[in-house]
Length: 189
Image 1 (tube, rainbow, N blue to C red):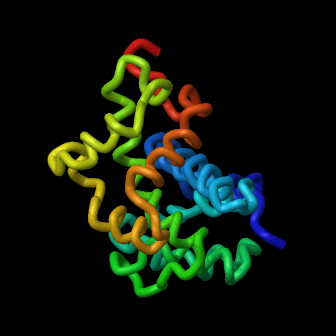
Image 2 (image 1 turned 135 degrees about the horizontal axis):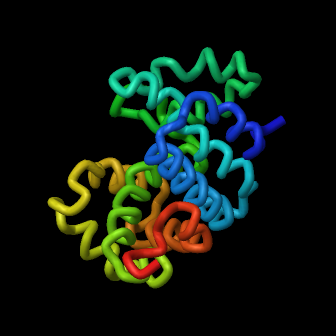
Image 3 (image 1 turned 60 degrees about the horizontal axis):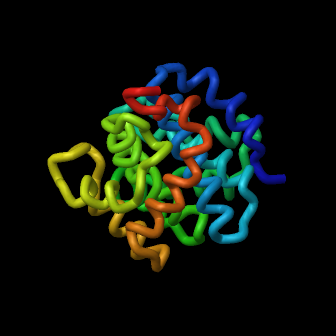
């Protein structure tokens, strides 16, 4: 049985309590849901994986994903789902390679949503009117949201056989309906 969003939120609630991390979990979850729709996959399942992806980050920021597999398996998460979550650390903190579209999407959108969030926060109407053209300008500016690793995003897009612009557009569309919940209504909002 695949992971449900409700179960992912239940598991995360005792581990991710900082608001910025909860928002990041939601951003990645909504972006993953949009990627699932793009690929004709199970939206809620992809959202659940996205929501749970940083399970150990708050407790072990310097040992990210080293305290994930066993606790998730103990919580009843399948080996396959734990592997999907671990794969977003490929080449960064582990060697768990993303092999399917779900894993490749998670690897890509984890960093990508950070730049989308930063873009939206600067705009009067936030993400509600953010266009991919504006995103791409900021994406090309290495000083903007400098902590978001563009090389990882590029690598992930290559794995998916997609352009950054295309993935960004899907993610923006997935996040937009949740603008209020994720704090991206903008400076006027």
